[in-house]
Image (cartoon, rainbow, N blue to C red; front, side, top):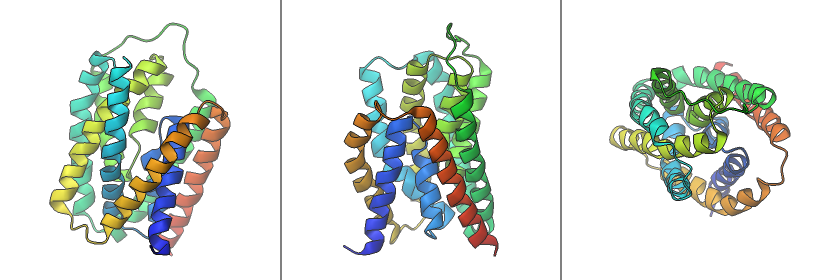
Length: 251
């Protein structure tokens, strides 16, 4: 087992630890790490989403069994999210990686800022918002597109926006995670049909192994870690990695 593979395992471990504690940012975190290691944008996003098919499937099933799924919210998010995700994946595979890489780094840098911003602004309302209108479908479409292009962002874009608007946090996280499996699956199918993975299977396997090791640890730590401080730390980490990627891409 060479050092590079162990690095992918470490990326999967760290990303799952972050996701397990925050309930979001697995894709944004892991994609930021992979881009900083020199993986092309399309291959990085594809690797992240193929590894996520397993984790989102388990997560979505768990939330369903626990009764954390609002089916009205799922109906608004799922199909637009899949459409946005597939469209974003198609665009990502159609553009030269060297051209799009600086823009992906800028997107991830912004997402890091969004996570820090949400750390200071998300405060659940006393009375949950029951709105399930077309704006949620547009949010799903945008979230799916950003998720594919940036290798992550479904959680930071969709979950944080809905919770900030006053949605019930438990039902929102469950519904968004349940929908995420189908969004991730749609993206992964398109990536499989359009990309030649070759050595990138090692990236996927490394992410899976690292995530599997971290999952039970993250679940325990999630109850003990201060959420606000952790969100700020993760946001700063993503911004730092994105600045490094941007610098290497344009120098």
